[in-house]
Picture 1 (tube, rainbow over the protein chains, first blue to last red):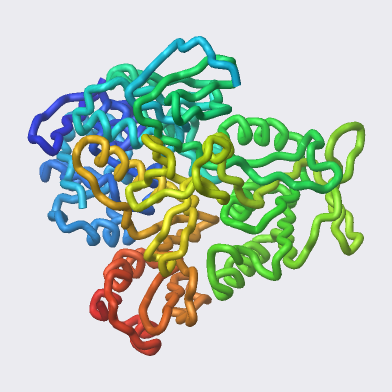
Picture 2: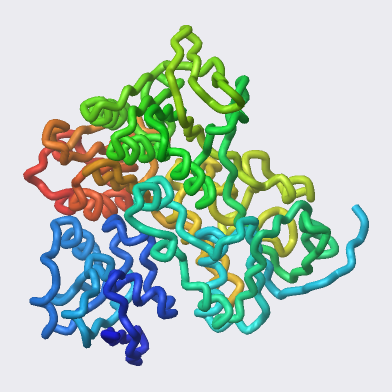
Length: 105
Length: 413
């Protein structure tokens, strides 16, 4: 199964098996990383599943919607490689994707 | 009541396995709380998210596996004991235990009451007929989905967010949908008139028969099942399925019976403590004084409120006392309309429209004595994000500036 590498806020990294039918947010949540809030059930309404994506993969991801861009703007920790994890559907092409959970706002 | 045989005892007992209860348990463990935790829920399912029930889950876009708050294994791994399918019927605050409907009892050192609310039912004739449903649990929605298969006419009673979200999904399913609202406009309890009129027009443009100032007389029956809804004006609407979304009643009766202060839910202080020792209340059932409502004691029915109050309690129980002061926010998705609300419109004395309704991207700004107290942003995430800073400001902001979409809201804070 393809792998997703998740770095927690404390800097530790763990690889998890990633199911292509789920979003990166759902994979992080379902693998017991409890620091990702993801309050709006992945409906692009809250901005609480902010992650930094390995720059190598940024171009492989679906383009960012205006709403996602605005919600990320609300974070004090935004970087060029910021995304909302709920807006990244995992796929086999993303095998090996590395993401870091952003600090909480 | 009789003293039961004490069978289990936990350091922290959380009653209610919704957003508030689960978040309290999760944060307690995140903060290295080492005592025992039990989470009691009256549904048999592993805790799941409720907002999708009237949206993606009803629409078949997200199955249950995608809306679990955490996977089933998570709870055991965190030593959080799930006691599911069990219901608390009484609280004994002196003896520190709760009594359950299965005649067992569970002792606590600290009790967190997070039971939310139950759907308000109609009281008219026929309200208990087969085919009349509410939308609060996964089981409710599964039953609705089963019955929708052969149904063509659906009547939704109540033009609040739940009713309108359900109407939007069923309209997409190709059902003939009627929405009945007793007030002169939809969303009257939660938003200003311009937003109500906008949503009424959007639903009607898609073929929903939306009727305001319409009072239900009774539910009509054929062979033991709903067949129609009769209105006070004599009209009879054919109905294969009726969905009732007329608000919730907070589930605080056992706490109030035990002597907790309250009435409309359980009253709590800024730390979410009830008037009973070692008992907290959070979420839909917790009546708290809010500075976002000019100090009035209110209940909020939202994920944000449940989640943030849970966090306050979990922090307090792990040596980091803080008061609940989070800005309320909310969302509702209907058709391609994404509503995001920040603040509370309670007590507004002025409404400013920012943008044009026809563009289907605008914000409604609520002011009180010149200060911005809330925004309803439709397809306008930028205003939602930037409006937050206006709420924190004590400055008065003019109508013209707020209405000028060429000036970002953050420039006004």
